Amino acid sequence: ADRLDRRPLCRSLHSFAFAMPGFLPRSIAAAAAAAAALLGCVVVPTKASECSLPLSSCMTTRCCKLDGWKCYAQNSGVATCKRSCTKSASWSCEELGPVRFGSGSDPSASPSPSGSFHAPPGSPVAQHGHIQVVGPRLIDSHGVPVRLRGMSLFWSQWGGKYWNSYIIKWLVKDWKISLLRCPMGVEAGGYLQKPRAEQRRITRVVDVAIRLGIYVIIDWHDHNATAHSKKATDFFDHMSKT
Image 1 (cartoon, rainbow, N blue to C red):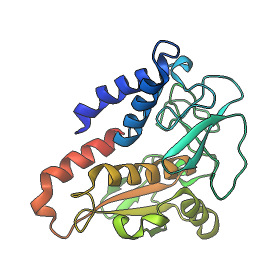
Image 2 (cartoon, one colour):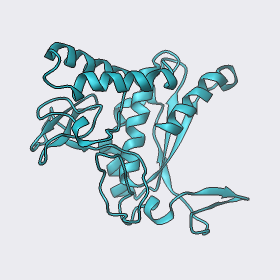
Image 3 (tube, helix red, strand yellow):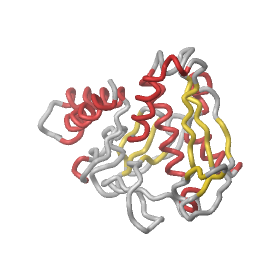
Image 4 (cartoon, rainbow, N blue to C red):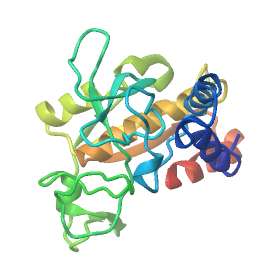
């Protein structure tokens, strides 16, 4: 389904899975949560009551209804509301939260159930804000030329095991990158064959980059791009609004 079809469907699945506890059998709620995760739905709750219940899946809501509970990732496809999390071979314990840029002047503010987000203090995005091309230069939100340095991941369908939060955090901490290139493979088992899987993979990586305050190049990595221009346009339209 394209974005216009998926958004209302995601919202409906979210309501069945999380927003009506006690009114539906657990089997229906679980099926709705599974379907939402399969579609790659990430619904930004509009109020705390829409967040997930304790010990339930929070993969699509990324928030928990009760104070003191947080949304912890077990792996790239499973997350649960828990009071605490101990990192292990089976649990990454990455804390998830709704990710979307909001307005406000406090750069240290944390993601909230309303979905507002501010880049971490001192991060490249916090320092430079919106950047644009002016002539031969990149200009930041202060009108100052900026130079970004970074790293490229490998084709998503073949190097997918490196498309994770651990690798990106390490690149930011150790290599001090300010820019990450994400080449999403289109042919040869990539987006054309597995659009949902590739969409979820690149969305997760972009979300991590946003939380870390670095810039991202989303690369439609296609050796026959002119043959797939409509799919590319739809893909970037979706990513620009996610």
